[in-house]
Image (cartoon, rainbow, N blue to C red):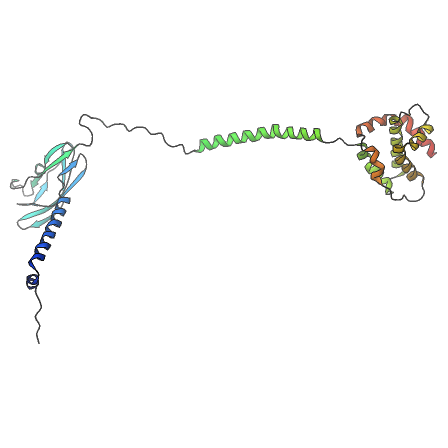
Length: 300
């Protein structure tokens, strides 16, 4: 069994004539658009333009040698046979304003006369005004300040100087204020370790006697008893409410054979909280003349 395959003409023959005409019109529009896109006959100075699918009758065409003063530079990028002619793709760049015929820059490869070629006129426009003969200097634009190494170095130096000044002046001023506001040591602070040692029994007899001599000498001056004899001055001190409390306790620690009992050291030192250590040091001037005679005579 044989089958008959449909051929191209029979298929086109079965198509409605209106569709055939429509398809042909579409092909014509596409071909025209492609030809327009690839047929650059206008350009500006220095810009590259192209002409594609250009059919030139006769023998093969080539480009003439060019020099530095040639106003238009033409280059053939492709060529294909087209019957008894050739089809070319051209590129051209114009260096002068005006109309130029590209045929002036072509020649036959076989040396025959260049005849029968269609007109190849191109138009070249200027990018800058006609009266401008030299390039225009661009307007200077100040670059953005992004802060480079120099800026960072200056900022770091300023911060370092500020820190140094703060250390030299602010820090010293605060230390001076702290020293000025710091309370001077009191007589109680000076007597604290001696009284505590005597209270817990760790003080030696010499330390106890020295502490008693210092207290007696201080209270003789404090109570203005320098004019009395030593024994009477000690009696007055022993009877005094503030002075007598610690003096009597110290005498008990000196002369009691039994271990000392627990006492209130803070209470004994309370009268001396309001006396500065400087005053106590001044009172020691009379220790050698008065306190040693009184306390040493009693112990003997």
